[in-house]
Image (cartoon, rainbow over all chains, first blue to last red; front, side, top):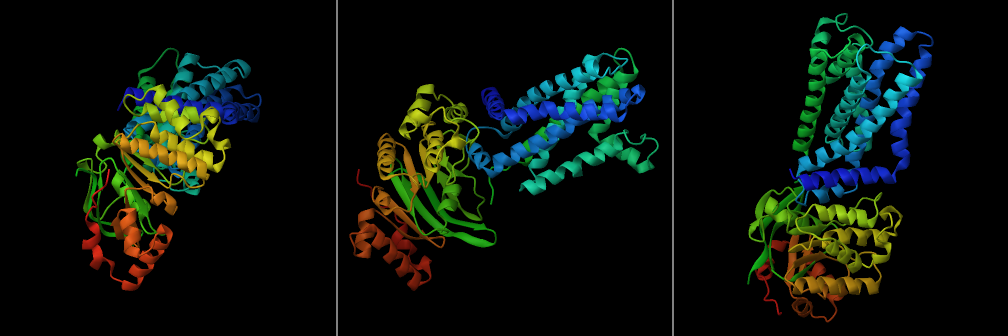
Length: 245
Length: 257
């Protein structure tokens, strides 16, 4: 890897987003609207919103970033820029981590707006520090983005790419403990849920919700989420091929 | 004669079809080689093999003395794909700066020079997606030229350009070759083929002629390259088994400098 190429790739991706203001606006507005929806779905049920709304702060950015980045990498492939890049001195990890940094900036913006709305507009209350909610929400977005980049390596068409979203995201959503407690599921599902990174994203947010100060489980969960993101990015780089048919 | 490219008995299959069937050819350093042949004959596949992005079945491709696709070569080989491959949502200058940043030691003067060379100095700050088709292609070309590569592989660089621009681009290619760059360019326009030092004619994955434009004209018994091209294509088609003639054509012609 090469720092100059890495940062210049980040700069280029951010430049592309700057030219596409509608996409940038959507990444901030869509999760905010969804959170508003959740707030009114649980109208007056403060305790429920404190749990469900909190978890949604991690899940919305995860899902949206997954979709955006899987399309972004597919676009590099279909417009021929990926093949061109792979004939230059750019290392594959420069490209993947360059994307990751750029979308981490977007995720931070998204997370700040979403957390602020939850906290001030909807009175979300957590026992822990609200800043930790933001940190975990951004980490979730980074994880979604890394998985999106990885999945797009296996997608040759847009039709394939969009179907990776339900295939990869929904099972994690069902098993993360949001719909049913992880100890209420069939035994083997509980085991699978332990292998899925979103489980730890949700658990980390629940820890901040339940306890004042920081807990060891919360730090472990944050580490697992970020570690899974780095592994996914490294795998995505490893699956890119310079030589093709 | 030092060779920038040495292709030896290259076989490539794509989608179950043999696209290149035992091709051998050499391209001298500092020369312009024209790659001509009908659509689907294997020109792009040969170019991709030289750049090192094509999976091959057998044979070797040596570029600047190294196996094609080696990391060392990526700093020195520029590849223009047939379809323009630049970011349509960025301006030309943003594209050019990004591609320049991928190489060592490319200055902003190099970037400006490349944009100027393709005739887009006035459109440098225009978003590429809003450009005409011809401008879009030239934007892609600028992003190759700016890296000042030792070897330039150009897949139909002048398609869709007007005659004045084509002439200017070819003058620039000649300048680069005179300065020591080796250029391989595919084309369908025979007056462009006539500007190359040597021509490689491909049909159905085999080389049917590899010689100077003059020698190709003489072999076909005509002064017109278009006619010579047609004659050779049809002749070889009727002769059949093309590999029989390989020996007489594979030898690299001496290039008059």
